[in-house]
Length: 297
Image 1 (cartoon, rainbow, N blue to C red):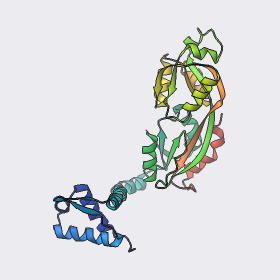
Image 2: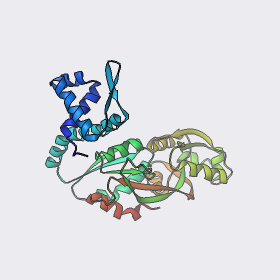
Image 3: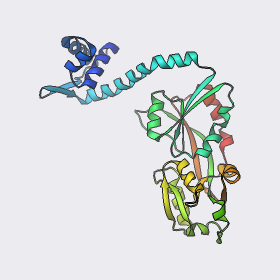
Image 4: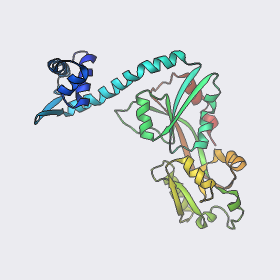
């Protein structure tokens, strides 16, 4: 196979985005024949047809759709390159772009990042979002690391690597004034209270469901939340009791007006740092992994 000609790939990418050679030629301000020739050269070098005729138009073949997917990533990175270079040249200190999965308990994030924030002149950029979307941004090098409550799924098309960062057993909390009125001991009291839980697709939900079942508790669920910060907010409002990592206990009970109902040490949340390299070379991420033992409760 011949080395990839990125000029040919660019013309193909524009044709794919515009949906036709004539529209692509107009956008590129080039002759239709020139654009068509460039696309044929790319097909010749790859050994596969990238477009097929449909009526009076064309559409991508399966091979063309795959090529267009990769071309989109390549040229999106290319468009971001000038701004990234300028930012790097003008930046003061060390930059760390962190993706934080929605389901990751936010009070735990500070503990997880504690070894990193001690880096002198650190410029920390945090982006919260859907786990799969963050992994895609990581693979495109828009993020340096993703923090999550689960490892990255096995995917041959997604080259990312999961590193164990810590763990914490789960405890139950409720607003302090509500806790004062509870008559039954923990965990039996949970059967008489409205409960707030993570959504079923969260990593810890099945463990919580099993734990409740083992203790004969039929939960009265009044809210399910994908975003852990939103779950905590509703818990603070008094809507119900809720589970959260035990490492958050001091913060919850001292500054958030919550009471610790009880602990369930056999339900554990695991925390992961996911990187785009198996061998991490970013100095701040290395310090984060080196300090992982401090995030265990």
